[in-house]
Image (cartoon, rainbow, N blue to C red; front, side, top):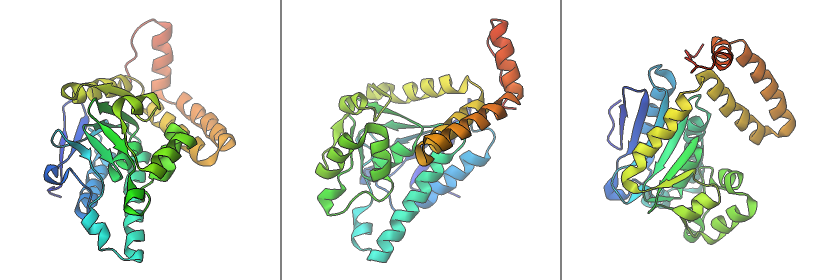
Length: 261
């Protein structure tokens, strides 16, 4: 599939870079964008050479400034519901990917943009970033998972304040409340994103994937189910070659060499 709304490249180190590429529209999400995102996510999932994914926005103003309001304004009630379900499916696919993803938030991440960032495994913001869910200002609410992921990241009270006022937070406040993992100068954003992902990729890939799944199961299904999954995943990890290598390397006081098996 050729892309017009995004750019997608895979570096030699296995870290793919997906750039939202509608700078003239502040990288707003529309139907065509979602189609291209789904195709790119499929490539990440199935291509063994891809080890991790960075998502960022073209230009210096926006990661993604939201959904395409013109498209939404013309939708019927049934169509609006289908648009929301499409967005939820796409972002859930990203969230459940068995490879780490990182949102490099450069500028505005509003509405669907913040929802996209929250579906990533990790988030780094540039100092000029603004993050928020302003949907109530348009007479609606988040449709791509914002009402669910935001309280899971920052807590019920802070999430409700953001959701009900529609006011964004700056990068420093986003870091303080746990919405982003790091804040860096904009010129250093992609380097910081790669450096953080490289730390993750130095570890056993099977263990990384299982840890991501364990967190998702626990948050989705509750503590008891999460604990059961964790124990099962711990047993599964113990059967891998990477576990044997990791424990042996620790005892031999050397760096482990993981092969993902």
